[in-house]
Length: 424
Image (cartoon, rainbow, N blue to C red; front, side, top):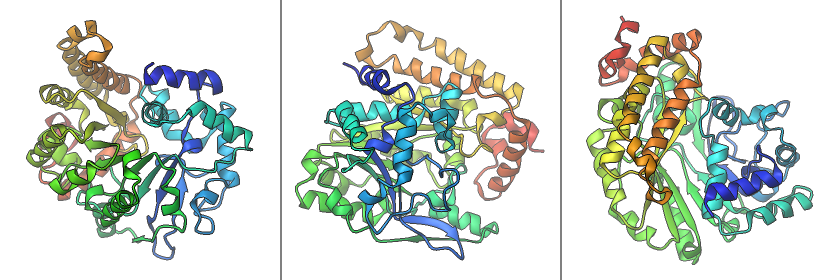
């Protein structure tokens, strides 16, 4: 049975808006960017994209009593589980990212994560969810955890923010922001929880540059937990040291999510600090490493959507059969809502014309995966078709790009000439 079929059992049992994250997942961060008069607090949220609960205090996901497990069972967490079970996701402002994605025809983090859990988590998921419901929505173990120890990163991506990149923190400070960043030690029960964790994800910041990531991997290996654990790494692919491969061999499976938002000048503009030749070399090396299963993540913006077929063609030429297409909703100044009608139509024309070159794959079997190139293009088309042009978003886009152009190797009008008339 496919992952999507198993996910459908979840929706048939608990409703089509059910999300596994508050039941099985945790996004745990010991780093933060705050105003100068605030302190950085450790926090644990159901996922990385969830926002604050309306009416809660300023830090609704704070760790309680230096205890992660206790913090996952506060009234806030229990209420969220109840609301999702009741089918109220569309009414939850905390779930706005997924709501917007699904409203505009894109795959949402919720849907992708549900499929992901069914593919990689070797437990009876339906039974475990029911056990938590029967226990008055208390979850007494963590099955999957994403750990963010630091925002240290060597890139300053134009769609990123200070909390996820130390380079963006410096950029924002230089542009007048009164902020600071800090890292804290892990909480008291972090290492004890790892004995039950089946999927351990590392995020940041750039994961392979963070010493804390390597320290936790070493701990897991030394305590004989690795052989039963899947680890995931989110990387900008600026490096892929051979020393990692020996560590990866100890784990049940390694899933390496590589961020590729375009090719050539486009990725170098959107992910400032990147070098396309280096990125391409490292991605191909990862692809050829049997200990690693790579997943390409492509963040769609008004910058790269006009050259999206170049990205698809590159994936095809290099046998990258799957790419997660994620549109920028949290940072709407860079989303495709900023595309003027003429550029939106140009993007759709290029995608539709490109699709015809891959349609012959539709007759292949599902296990062939070649048809994923068509599905990739269809997700890109759906993202553009279902997001309406917003003149205010265009204004925000222009203002933002004018600032980014000051420190970029090339201005956007040279990287994407189609945008030139709006930057005179």
